[in-house]
Image (tube, rainbow, N blue to C red; front, side):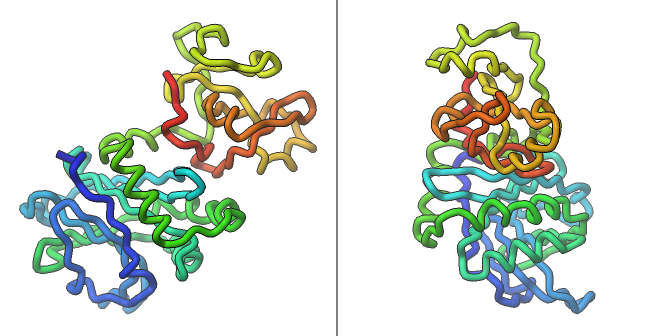
Length: 283
């Protein structure tokens, strides 16, 4: 079952150059590594995956779906990339990125510019086959440093513990995949459930009640303006920058007022939406 798969950090792979045949994985493991492609003679980041069953072959690998997200766990910001093979829930691989690792910023920059990604299918002997696909993470990684560079550095031990605890306490891989499936650019705030602030099980300050919304994918929310969009709000229509954030996130982060609208320090990533912990979502 996916819930028992380990979340693997790739600290040993960093910015070192690897041969694709040097990668050794156990079933269910996925890692990233910088390697030199023998055919293209170019250094690029590749994903190395070993399915639970070693029977997956190149002829059966028809599709690799990509999703990414930013998760806050305590004070550590965890960057997550997920790959799903052939739309099978049994072949989902989560790979985590540490921006404050020694080579973290360089890796993020490379991912923001790399046009393609090669996915290596492995067994105990190394790479069996590979699949070349467009790098759908480019925009995601281009926007992340604007948020992560302002965060207080954490140690590698703190990062590893945060990933391990988050995975153990909250989400098997199928849930992680579902968590980042929402369309973030224009989040839907309509719902057939006609709820109001009185339906929320907790307390919502009176001045925020008018901004309450219930969304199908995020539950009880407050429509706020992310603080990193404040400059645009000063010269535009504030209502165009309102995004639905979980009530818990807004109350925990705090809020202030700008032109009559609540502003909260909840990071916004263009193309991916608000970076809020999944445990803040309430239905």
